[in-house]
Length: 543
Length: 71
Image (cartoon, rainbow over all chains, first blue to last red; front, side, top):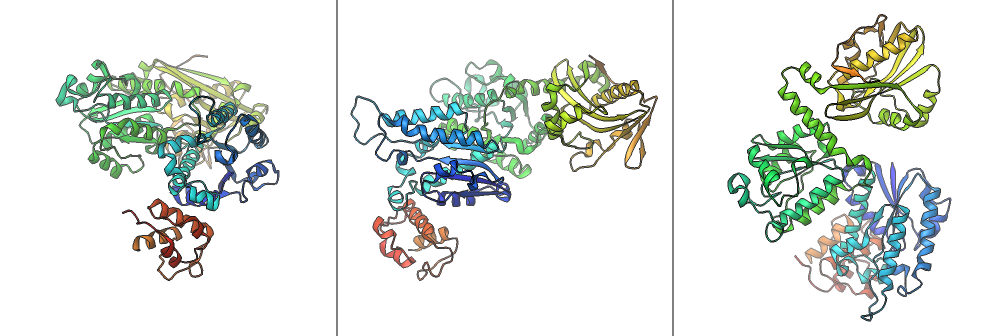
């Protein structure tokens, strides 16, 4: 069980009930939401070391602040003094409880009812100041004013509820707020989707390219075609945040590519996409192969198409793929894309590793293309010009090594998980060797993709961990790594190598690994003796 | 009337009739009353602020609610 705690300076029991009800099924299974009782108790709770907030099960602490309740008499010139306390309390709580994630709302502060046309608006200043403080703390933000603006203050709040029960929100407001907290919780759990699959005709431009031609489609910077251009801008922004884009369109490929190559108002370019499937195959097939080729799960995909038929076909055939409804009025398209972006692709923060992602997957697409022109697999592998490096694990690689053991499921022979601290222990154990392998080829750099851990007591060694990123499966990398490792072990006087395999639900693909490598079964494990098997690969050593 | 009953039932999570009250429906607490008032407001039906505290039954709601439930 994990819990979300909701803290507020107003009554939130009703909100918490609603969250419990609105939770998606898979979240419901293991998540509980609770409010800290007691009116305006949020400050003292955050300061109290024995508060229920600090129980292990609590992962997320959500602080919802109703602006007007912080400034009962309205914000005035002293708003910084009023807000300094809450800032301090939140900063201190975060510093002492690093295992919790704090989410804090920004403030919606209506302007005073009687405001002269000139002069300062302290409500607006206070809200901006608060937001600035949260940003400076780098705390995840629940953007309350944005929610309110979308719904309208009149609809978001209810003065009756406020005067009766210190509950400022209307039912509508509460529903929106509950949904937003749950959305944020999803983001914190890493439920972010990875790939947006788009239709072309009447989705990225108006009309049908195959019939209307380049001049006939609606796409422009002003007027009717601008709705499509504005929608493309949202999509482009997603690509810049590391979301993979793909196309699934029923079209002739050359027709489909023309706007990307020749249309002056096309914001999205061919190179923004990792896959463009424009043919006459059923869309579910194309979408499934996109997932397969990118090595990502179907549940990481979102599919956007104006045709209800295509949407239904995909929903029926691939229920894991998220398929949002498409607006019937095309002027709503940019807003719709914005909603899709927020609902499925919000990141906690945009990291550097996201930047090069499209590049990496595109390189994979080019490799695939190369594969289809080369006649044999061997020719293809040779054409990749792969270079492999192998080195003993360094101190500065502990985090990456631990991460590999945590995240690798398919090509992982024993699935032993190690923390960074565990790795440090192994590194300092004189009987243990830890190797890291990195790979690059003509199309790009894969980075460090393979980890091997062996326990050595000459003349014997046991390979306890052998894992590799699934992106590099099927090209002989594992053969080359194992041969190299065997050589290193032989140099230490090892003549017998024992390989281990522990079956899990995910590592079926490597069940026969040791047999394929020429090892012979021996009870639960596998053995090979010096001189070790020679393996032919198309990989050069670079170090 | 039917629509009001439906709204009350939805909030309380059980089907209620005109004769039900806080004593006959398990879990009908003050928070639920608050949520009923909220749901009615959302539907365009209003209960005066000073009457909310007196609500103890479906009948009380019928007696104090004004306005029509929007379809």
